[in-house]
Length: 485
Image (cartoon, rainbow, N blue to C red):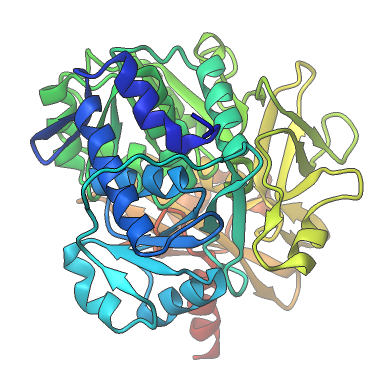
């Protein structure tokens, strides 16, 4: 077998554990042997449609075994997989398809109408009679193009090689004791690298079972954990916050859960403590699409003593901050898991990488005396009030400690006296709605006065990206419209 990439994984895993369950979805189970055969049939179909090494194959649909079949099949041909965010509008999808130069769009049946309106060859049924595929795939070949959320303009296509994804898998296996009997709940969307790189691929290589869900639902999550005896799960902070806010939190049977991993945004310490007090191992990490995604990780053994930290650099990787010890600075990253650049965008690549090969993350962090990273905020989210830097994530963490607060987002808004001041958008638990004055008084003594938001707006929900991150650009536009009135 000349395939040194991800495309060989289904055959290799089926060779070792053919009868084990690879995936569960909607009550249906697929063994590793069945999955390898189905992946081979998709590869045969793609080859019959003329897909070959270097071609881009896009996929549009929710979490489903077909996603994994399409991805591994594409990789077995040496082609590049382009998973699409199914929450994007038709014009946004059209841009990504055009920018990537996708040769073929594979899509779930429910997206047939959307796919029909796009200028690309699109199909929803993509299986054929399995045939032998013998394509030479090297670790340095590009495996994925993942488009960033585009919060500051057009999305960029981050390229990830087979080596990037394989080294990230190794890093995860070093940081987490993933076992062959792992039952991993994959509820975060697979079109984002966190669900793929931190849960599906590590579980797959160990021969564990991935339980796939098409969307995030708190009640369904509790049901699946209890029904399938889930052992591991990744989520963004909002997902874990909603689980803890559920009436089922205190009584649900979570005894099977061995590891919870959280990332994708700053994690309030109060949320970490909530899970630790429930007796659960809650591991925080930090990463980006461009790092496949793990850049730092806090292992289980340190999760209590260093709660709130994003851990240290992953085993096969390096991380640094461009500031004196203890001072906030931009996080710089290097390693075999780091992307070689942006697809068809040499200008963005040159801007994001230093001359000596460090990736500029755009995130701000401090590093303590033990080398643990504490991510402060996104560089672009920081604002200056009266000459002082204010990091919204720090303010959000303080507000989150108020018992009435379910979710919160803080932005900087123009102010004639201070230049900028904070504005908080707060989602409250049912039956609780503290006044802005009450929240500001709650913050006195917890954070400096200049960090306390001047205005507080209670909202029903916060706007989010497909990965669950808050769309702060949308909140800024909302605040601008309010000031104009």
